[in-house]
Image (tube, rainbow over all chains, first blue to last red; front, side, top):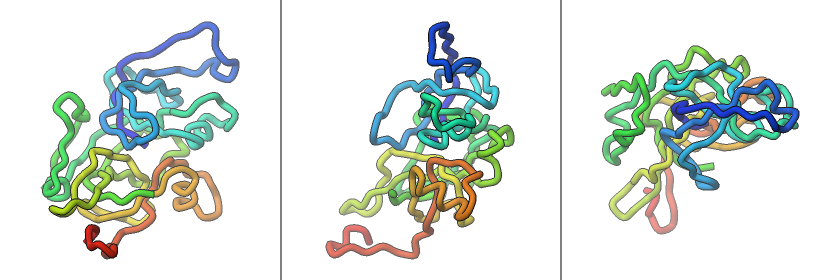
Length: 113
Length: 98
């Protein structure tokens, strides 16, 4: 799964019939594991009810379709959860060093020793 | 699968029902360099079935391998990445992974 922030929503009148009644969000990844297709934004189906500005966990691939109840959905990303907080272990992420970039810090990020 | 280090945890109470039931850990991928271990910059949220903790070196499986790791018999718990090993050590002929 990836961590991302909801930055918008898309609407469409003409769409695949299996996408009817599905809410589509624009999610900006806060971290990414690639390597297949790193992207600045991704569009994810939202069965959870996230809103713009919230941080979410996005599931990719087959489980994203299974979460929607039908593996035949033309979907490869769906929102798995709305994030309450993220803890980053200072000891574990130092030497080697890991930090979220300033513009991609999760809401409710807390650094623990 | 890839090798990484647990660097944190993601807390979420409002989850999709089929995503619930597992701890989610932040795992940063690592690679070996001549100066030792280094992060590659790739970070994944991985479901944890082994009770790993911050700092643990782990192996993460993706795709259906991840789902197999979570539920041996049923596929009720969904995830696209899961921790499948907590490493005791690594070795390679060149010693670069020590």
